[in-house]
Image (cartoon, rainbow, N blue to C red):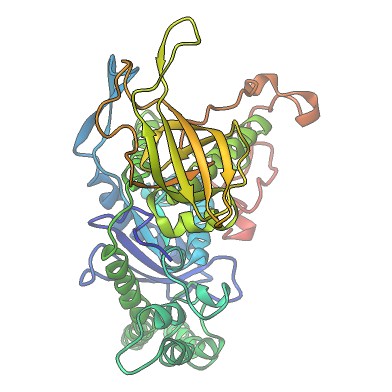
Amino acid sequence: MATVRHLHLSERPLVLVPLAMAGEANAPLAALVGAAPDEARLLIVPQPRNRQQRFAFAAELAGILLPYLDSFRGVTEAVPTDRGRDVRHRYADAPQLLVPNPAGVTFLRLLGRSTRFRRPDGDHPVHPSVPLLGRWLTFFAERAEHPGSAALLAMTEALTLHWATGQSAVEDLHLPALLGWIDPPAGLTGAAAAARAEDPTICPPAGPATDPDFDNRLLAPTIAAYAEAEADTVARAAAYAELERLLRDQLAPAWELMWRGVGLLRALPPGGRVAGRWDGDKDAFTGYAEHLDAGGGPQPRRDGAVAAAVRLHRLERALTSYAVQRAYDDPLVMAEHRLTGEAFVGDVTLADPKRVDDTGKRPVLRPRIQVVTTEPVPMPVGATLWSPARPAQKARVVFVTPGADGKTEVVLELSGGMGRGLTAPPGTVPEVGERLCLTTLSDAFLPAGNFPAPEETPWTHGGPPAAAPPVDGAGVAEGGAATGSDGDPAEEWA
């Protein structure tokens, strides 16, 4: 479905395959984590209903994730601002997390939500790294919602962005079946490989959900044996080793599939605008790291009205820009817009690169070209078009003349992208014989909207937000009222 890779792929991504206990609210059971195929580290929770063990799991995960994040904070780069009159600095690279599917992103978001408000002191202390882990996981989960961001990627979404399968979108969420279609083993067709991958005894689910048969037949007896051996050190160690082996066997196939997916994506050349979107991830990573370094607090449980509106507006702008950039980078994506009448492709048959318009106060360079196409041209006279080959140049439709042979002649007047003189530099004006794609999609800068300050929130949207009450180490607001599932000890885990 693509000729280029539409997302950034780090040289050293951190792959995380989570597993959660069925029937519990995001209770972690195990995870395989590592930044290389041979660096997998298994983390397990022998008793997922035990809150101390769950937070010990979070501390272990923090011991892997936080050093990985810090490894990107050693080198900075200067970025010109204010049209080159000033510079700012950001980290030269940023971390990237990979999970098997969107449910893995949800797992990390809920894990961040349940840990970012914890404190290392008070009635329910946790390791000091746990709340920091929660803030970073929340950061990555929020970046995953940003169109075009590659900070946190679900492998199934990354693969279906570039390959098509013979199954439904719901079935594409199953990583083993998806890779069966895309990269089937020797001797099997895509359909046969996908059907084989749906057998949980051959390819266990890629998490975080477990197979019910696995839960009932293997997992539950092993956890029960571990619990019953509490007083017997030898038996407890044996039960722990058996649980560790069982969970590693369950996660290992998904781990191998993740790195197969990385290899398939890495074989595609990156699109021309991928690096620019990754710069946005580097800016976001730098900004949040500086926020934490300055003693900034955790992300709020809920956005205020203004913050929510600003966030939605930012996501909408990013989605529009992302769709245009993908079309500009990839003719297969642009083909969809050609089918909907938003673009057409034709050959330049006439060109007047020296034409000057002197009807105004001063003469300006306004070359004209004629493009002949066999595709429909629904754009009216006066419409402005752009070409992915010259994104800074506008082409105004002057004439549209349908021909009797099924061809349409389109005369365009060009402006921009040719310097400030009255002579166009070589290559800035399309030449006769050049095949040109023209579209109504623009990659121009989208200005931000205007929003009131939070203290000026209108009454129709709840009025100015009230100050949040202090929260103790258990996540309970002063006065005794529980703050919800993020911190209520009675709920144990959100």
